Image (tube, rainbow, N blue to C red; front, side, top):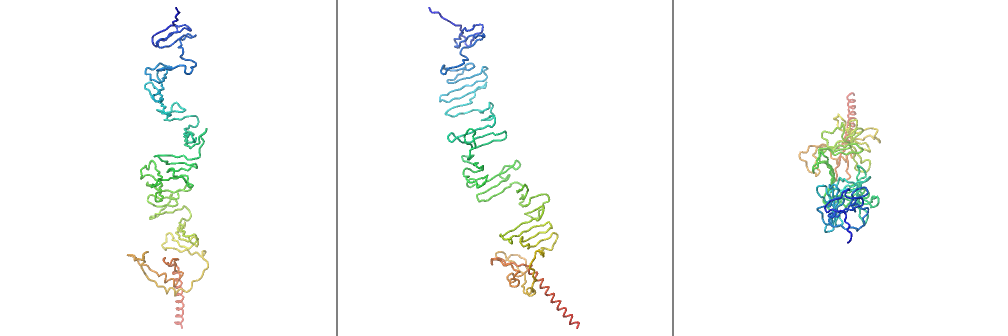
Length: 465
């Protein structure tokens, strides 16, 4: 009869031998749990096969639940691998479903949560995902020493774009050429919304709003191209102005080719150059040129105010390219208001605190070719002086018109030609230079005075004879 070797054994589930039950190398079997134990040289009980140094691939096949560093699960699921810490406070499992999808669950001590699903080449995450961090603060948190970066590249063209945190205060969104260092790629970075492109930055750094139809910036760096039938607008608001349609300010270019500068609040539109306020339009529609500063004076009825802190202040008018076509009106620090030709200095001025009217410029230093005026008495005597009512531009009578006094330019042209301004177009209005007529009248008075004095002398001579 063959000799039977029976090791120490137990049929009690979860029963483990103690150091006093075995000696070094002696075996003990738990026939219920199918576990094999022995005692090592240090007198400790070890389970054979629990911590092997190597495991040959395919050496073991497991059916049902498998426990790693913990007890087997009572709620085992077919095709599921469970992992649990010895304390039983944390656990995870990997589950293969009938369609071939793989799900990873984690157990937080009170409930199972699905954290990752892999199926059909796609991965689905639940909760925050951290790359380079074990405590992500966002749905996707990428952290690394130096620059943090997320890149999306085409596998065929090896190009795309990246989000890169370059410092504590800088974020770069870049169009890139895929390489080891994700070099900047010289092309377009575009942004879409509502199923269409709405904004792009080209390779020259130009920014365009309005979509892919922007192809020519014509030297600009910022262009807004509105959709068909709509105006292009820039709206500016603050916390105090509000954000409604009647708040703030902005710039609008409409479909009728009108450019509008808007301020919808009770304030001014101010123009700056060289860091100085050089002009503004206030809320009442008044225009100030030269800025507004302490000491600014605006006329009682003025809608346009031009100011200058020193020197003459005025407006220049130019109707042609010749110097004689340039005129100006200006004020001087001598409290005079001038109307003057910038080439000949012909003109006149009004003086402050004087009711004498216009003063003509008559400085001998600006005169040449002086010639005495000829006989004028007959010319003055030939004038047809009268009173009249002016017609409107349609040559119709003006109701309630007041009487005017003077001569007819066409008649004066026959007597004193220099006193008539003849238009190049004969259909335009003729003008009379009253100042020339005045000086002919003065000359006529001088002639009459000479005649009077001569006659007086003759009378005195006859009376004394």
